[in-house]
Length: 213
Image (cartoon, rainbow, N blue to C red; front, side, top):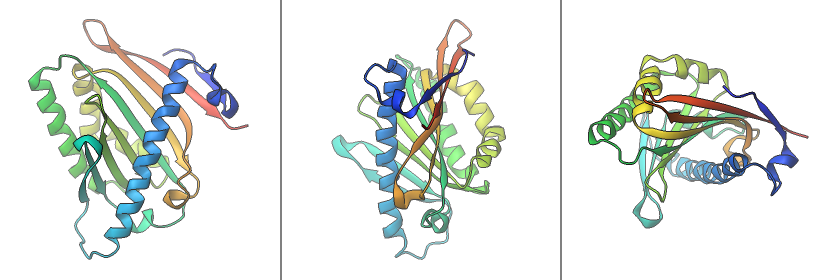
């Protein structure tokens, strides 16, 4: 892993910031939009009486792009409590083998179902981007939930077996929402950049942490 780079808030907003920092800020705009859509969806969900978990919504975005939301704990999401979030933005291999693409879809559906049993997981959204890639937003009760998800067998398989055969790069963002969905303020704490290369498709990893002034 490359040595950590620490940036304060002012530096991340500067025009002279490195390209990968500017990309993180652009990703944050998309993640904030996704959080807003979760908030709006929750208000409509409040009128329903379903007890099934997760509650799945498929929204039509511009240019017929798909936005899927899996809501696991609507009651907690409606509170003004601080939330943790993970944002996953990726670039798929081109060309991507049909068998690998199929396995990626299978693992995604499996994760959505199995994560329902994870305490502290609140929602998992996937938004199709203009280039055919996807942005994922996971909302959590606190940062400790990330450890339970990371250690789950299905997630381990997806991260270490499926991802190298499907992606050229991944940007994995960690952050928090101090006032929850009600405030819609999202702050990045760290970003990990994975670049897959070489015959064995092992990733090069760069980690960047952000500090508030």
